Amino acid sequence: MKPAYEKPVIKKLHNGLMNKFGYSPAYARKVRTDIDGVPVADLVEKFGSPLFVYSERILRQKYRQMHTAFSTRYPNVVFGWSYKTNYLNAICALMHQQGSIAEVVSGMEYEKARALGVPGENIIFNGPHKAQAALETAVREGAMINVDHLDEIYALERVAQKLGRQLHVGLRLNLDAGVYPQWSRFGFNLESGQALEAAKRMKYGGKLVLSGLHCHLGTFIMDAGAYARQVEKMVAFGCELEKAFGYSIEYLDIGGGFPSKSRLKGVYLPPEVALPAIDEYAEAIAQALTKALRPGDFPKLILESGRALVDEAGFLITTITATKRLPDGTRAYVADAGVNLLFTANWFKFNIEMDREVGGVNEQSVIYGPLCMNIDVVDESVLLPPLSCGMRLTVSPVGAYNHTQSLQFIEYRPASVLIGERGEVDLIREAEDLADITRRERMPKRFAQEEVG
Ligand SMILES: Cc1ncc(COP(=O)(O)O)c(C=O)c1O
Figure 1 (cartoon, rainbow, N blue to C red):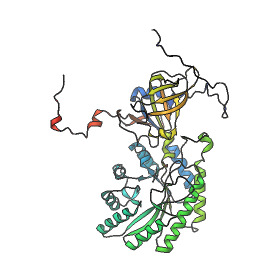
Figure 2 (cartoon, rainbow, N blue to C red):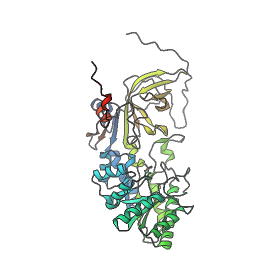
Figure 3 (cartoon, helix red, strand yellow):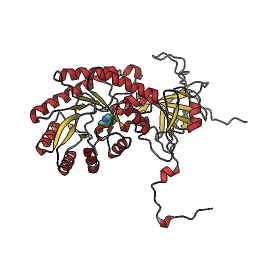
Figure 4 (cartoon, rainbow, N blue to C red):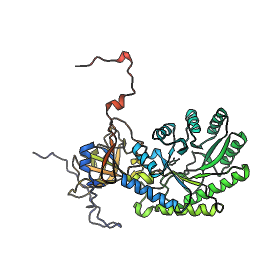
């Protein structure tokens, strides 16, 4: 066969120099042929491409590691699985099996947790929008509700009125722990006195009893000291509430936010260098608690970690479907997965591994997804040797916030599988088809068409 003509381009190659991490970028290769011992080729053959793959081994190991880090340093620790991070049923069920309760941020997530068999009292209900009906259900079922704003106080008071009893609730705070930009849009601000005013409002309303404090600083927090400052402020505020209103704070819910070994764009050093270990976070938090709390007083410490537990357990296999040269000479590829499945590509630079060794020199390349949209870029600058159509790439870590935020936009969402600890592969979500897309649509009679042909 005659080879296809390709327009020649001149491109400067940065070759031969060692960088400070000791490898030659011109020839560095990242090859992955299997995930937890299961060949990438077999996974694709059986379940298609693209494909989300989760490792049960990593999920359980991460959970055990984090649980040990905290429970060996503080006697009253509870984990609340952050559903929005990844609410595939199998992942949630695994987290519950490990001992996590559920942390949900919407009526839909609340229903999901209940459908999975989680009792109301094992659900933490957070989030800025809780519909009145969802609030009422959550109250009746005994969920822990963390109030986000004043209107929610009024809504809960209406529920209390209807039920003819006082309700125990938590208050979400936002505070300055040295993490900027500060997430101040959720909850009540501590330093301005807004949180104290809210507590006062609850007290004088007489229908709500404040028994918990919640604060989620943000996500991918790389400073363990921020959590120490957070818990110090939460404990001090709890004491203030006790003195001013006689409230007794039974839980301190410190949210999530621990990072995974992903690369946040703009962070120069590789994650191994930049990130504190989970033990450092646990140590900072436990020490700050011990210092701030009265001796022998151990309110429940709730952690809502999402990313740090699931991100590294998630992989996405994608296939190269076209190779291109851009007018400026940049090598470009089209893959069958893009930002429709990798929503977090905007903020994170993924690890991209090829399914085989390839000859040739690395070039700065761009990987586009399958969407007919300019923004669909998986990686705008990745060093790759010349790839050919049909090659599989494994993108990781993608376990956090990608499946839950995936878009059904011009493409079907693909299958998801879980690899068990003995190498068994279970389908945990089927690939979608047209029926999934159109199931809820209704055709007005006047548009109904005779079948053509
Ligand atoms: C209230 C709350 N809790 C927990 C989490 C989980 O955070 P992460 O995945 O960073 O641990 C989030 C995420 O934004 C959140 O908003």
